[in-house]
Each structure stands twice: as structure tokens, then as C-alpha cells.
Image 1 (cartoon, rainbow over the protein chains, first blue to last red):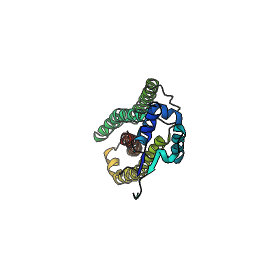
Image 2 (cartoon, rainbow over the protein chains, first blue to last red):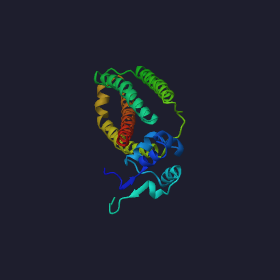
Image 3 (cartoon, each protein chain N blue to C red):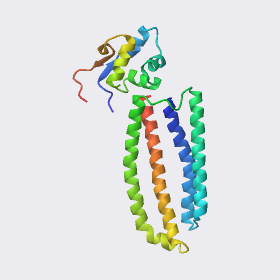
Image 4 (cartoon, rainbow over the protein chains, first blue to last red):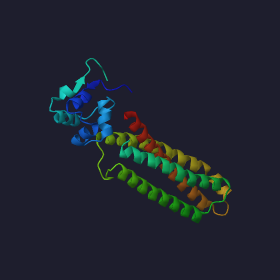
Length: 74
Length: 154
């Protein structure tokens, strides 16, 4: 199965926030570290709610965290 | 590895070991035309007890080592994986139960002829164990799907 046509900047945002660990991010959004790792590696597309929660943790707009790859059909 | 993936590995391991033994012995006895309902029931209860005790103990140990509470609700990816595995398992069960029942019905005369001392009892025991085996295979595959999906996102 092809990865979802969405990229994200979670790794960079974690780095910019004092090297926040995946576990810290997971705890703050109520998920497991494995799920955060899957989202970060683009192996799983989170729900809209989870995407907003991640953006909220980093204090940025959702579009800063997730980017749609234009032109890619499902 | 997440707590739920560990649970799936534990379930697969225990199911393979305990229920392979149970069905291995059962079908060997059927092939040898020596089935005893009382013995089979006791063996079934012992296997069920061993499965339950091992699963609870290993899951508790896994939870303690991971410092996770078994009651923690699954997150969205885990729920998604659970739903996919359940769907797959349900379709497999829908397939296996009719195959088992039709196969059993076709073999009724042969079973009755093979166990002249208690033909009705033998048919009932073999049917019940066939259905039980369908459930065990379904559970095994469902847990294997869990593991495959967890690995895919790891």
C-alpha cells in the first residue's frame, strides 16, 4: 500500500521544542509512542482531532505540521 | 513494541502451543477411533484453564515491565488495527463455520460407521470440536493480523 499523500514536519518541530521525545509528544496527545512514530514516518494518517492536538502541542497551525502533496490521487 | 502488540504475540504463542496440543491429540484419537467424551472434556477444560492463566500472567508481566496499565484504552491507531483484525477474523469465521458444518454433515455416515458403540455421541463430539477449531483458527489469524498491522506501522 502506498503511503498517504501527506508529509509532516513533526521531527523538525520536536527538534525545535528542546528535542521533545516521541514519548513526551505521545503523552501530551494521549497516544502511544508507537503511534506517534508511525505518524512521523508517514505510515499512518492521524485523525483530524489528533492532527489538531499535535499542532496545539507545538503552538502552530495544522498546516505547519501536515502538508498535502498536491496532485496525488488516493 | 506496544503493550497491545505484546498481547497479540502472547495470544498467538499460547494458542499455537496449547491448542495445537489439544487438537493434535483429539484428531489423533479420532483417527484411531478411540474417543472418550469425559477425557476430552477434561482435556478441554485443562487447556482452557492453562490458556487463561498463562495469558493473564504474561500480560500482567508485560504490563508491569512496560509500566502500563492493562486498562488503558487503545489509541486511534490501535483501534484502527483492532477493527481491521476483527473484520478479517469475522469474514474468516463466516467462511470456516459453514465449511466445517457442511464437511461434517457430509461425513456423518462415515463417523457413525466408525464409532458403532456410540454413533450419536461421536458425531456430537466431532462437530463440537470442529466448530471449536474454527473459532481457535479465527482467533489465531485475528491475532496474527494484529501483529502484521502493528509491524507494518512500526
